[in-house]
Image 1 (cartoon, rainbow, N blue to C red):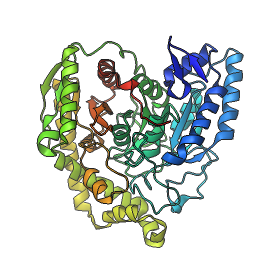
Image 2: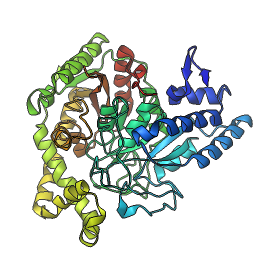
Image 3: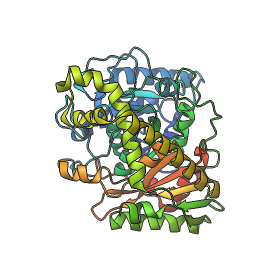
Image 4: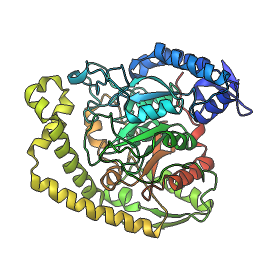
Length: 472
């Protein structure tokens, strides 16, 4: 069924979060109707995409009935009232298993919601179920696990990015309009890049990680994944905030992320990090052309664009790798010693590398990380936002281990896990083979509002929010 919410008739599955929420608030759309339409689409398309580990359809429909009754009684929980969401399966949802896509935890039932899930529910969101990930957010795409890996809706023979792979695939395919992901080395922004959606890694500590299975305490972030910039800001508004029980949580002001969405790029100073994709890790030519197109569009919108120099991608990646693998080993070492066969081959291999890193390696990496933080802060004292590549290539085939191994490290996302600055990835265009290309914007600490402003300026100039994969 269709609904007229903005003067144009739109399929329910392509409604944005903002469109759906407005239609529900005005009683033009029933939360039950929307939830059922998405569950029907999931039933039809997910066998091709494997975005879900578990669909919680009965609970979602019950929550939709409650949301509908609340609207009928003149009550609304918040900006996401009645809008469905998918949850990456390393994030706890009360009563459902948090498997981390692994045999190790396949019977691990959560007793409480993660803080981020609880906040989404408080804002009125309806949880549809748990989404595929790479095993423990590090080992994938893998075919030797209890559940198959998610696939890319633009071409199901291709990789959707990871580790928030089901989140990216499902949002892009119109199975749900928003999802929670996690990002330790780029795992929100990678599927956002591969699947052509908007993915934000917020400032470190802005969103509580309590109730999320850790990979690296120093680098882990929780972030929103949506089809539009406006929706991303709405979702961040719901999940951000200090949590005194999360040791990494920041006691900093939050909110009003969408306040400047439509101010445009005029007068904004943008630093273009060309050396990431031109020198450090030469990108596919189509990626380079698309980045230049983004830069020119922002210049035409009135932005002042200049080149910026940071440490090399090779060095950023090395620091991320040492910290991530050292901390991941501290978490997984006991299980890897006692039950190594319960891990998939990829996760086991990647996690075991942490056993061979010493305290000296870890300390040197953390010392260099502080210098990298200073370098990015210095650049952002001269400009308002940084522009750079996200992925250096379009998504490769999912059945080519060699291509996955070659392309997976070819990215510019890990620098900003190291430094904790907010970073947003979104589509910059389509390749000649019809796969998404991507761009990344990076901002000052707790200045997500500026990131959204610039990303929205590009979205308006390009119409990227209106591009959907040719599926269903």
